[in-house]
Image (tube, rainbow, N blue to C red):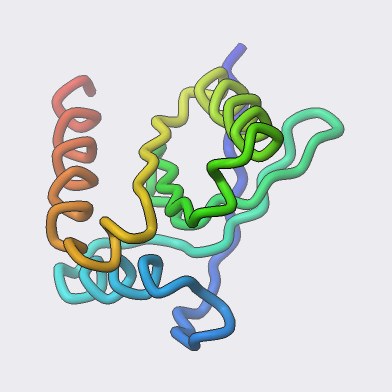
Length: 122
């Protein structure tokens, strides 16, 4: 049985304290292209809770990883998170914050390719 991913609408508030500079750049690019998305989505899988940086319906999780994601502890947590999301049918895309900040259009191009791929499977 496939579990349904629950999301909740979130107002697009772009403030420096709420998002990394890479997240802000990708959010602005998504908005400029008219792509529907939600930010900081809380997901529960069993007793575990995760936050998805950017969720693009119907099933794409976009994670923008800063330098702290390079630690072995954080990397192992990210791996568990990715595996659980994939088990729910969610495609996980990870990008370094520096890449998202400097090339947001390339990040959004990758997201659009995933949207198109998921639509062609339907």
